[in-house]
Amino acid sequence: MEKKSIYGLTYEQLTDWLIENGQKRFRADQVWDWLYKKRIHSFSDMRNVNKETIALLEEHFVVETLEEEIKQESKDGTIKFLFKLADGNLIETVLMRFPYGLSVCVTTQVGCNIGCTFCASGLLRKSRDLNSGEIVEQIMKVQKHLDQQGKDERVSHIVVMGIGEPFDNFTNLVDFINVVNDDKGLKIGQRHITVSTSGLAHKIYEFADTGLQVNLAISLHAPNNELRTSIMKINKAFPIEKLMKAVDYYLEQSNRRITYEYIMLRDVNDHKEEALQLAKLLRDKRHLSYVNLIPYNSVEEHNQYQRSTTEDIQAFYETLKNQGINCGVRWENGADIDAACGQLRSKQIKKKNVG
Image (cartoon, rainbow, N blue to C red; front, side, top):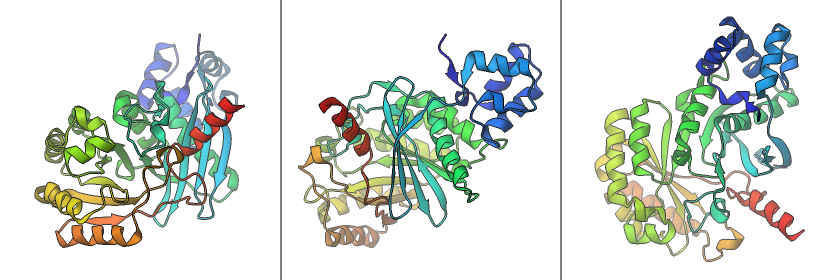
């Protein structure tokens, strides 16, 4: 029997499982406390839990399934981890330092099928979804790294923007959010969690219906169908009209601001014309919109793209502001390491294949 990650269970699921297996309800509180507050590495570390319960847990679950392969540290404090999963696949997780706290970017899939032509994450096709335990464990690995530094630091924010399309792994994503948000555990507030999607419109409806108070970000990157389809093949299935209809539903249900991610590609989508089109697209919902302009991190395999000049980024920003659109420029963290999402993983897989 293949053992599952204990981190894959929400508090309610853990409680139900323990009761179904003949344990008292209070055992769930004990186990949860050891996992998320004391942050043990193995079940045998749970000192106030009886041997019968520990043996039962060891028979069905494991605490740690991720193995650290590489850790890159940037001068600005960003740390990129390359983790090996139990089946040998590789994923990336990133710790970023901001004035408001420590944020971790997590991966939700092994590879990606969305096929954005500028992105390192999609260089390798999706081979599988991560289960909820593997997503949660990324946070736990980073938190345990912080614990070892002895600085009493904690992960306070999460962005689900790593390798993969989160909404293509919807059930595991929602379970992950419920685990890390639980007041009895890591207690990371829903409003400190941001989920990014490439624009799976049908899942935006489903996400709106969950009632979750997490932040939604949409990878837009172009203001018209022709341009967006040329750089994001997902636009064929979910063109801008269909995407914006789903956005309207989400806004009606949640009344929460959406961030639109817009990667700045030189002479592709960075002209004043595109800025004006983007402003027009968002005009009727601008009070609940924020455009995040992202300078491009070059990827060796996508050498047809270069970063927009600082002047062009500034001009694009000013055009949006003059049109009444809230926006900002996101200068990247970890510029001196493999900054682009999926880049470190792609390089390591290449090395192994060459070797």
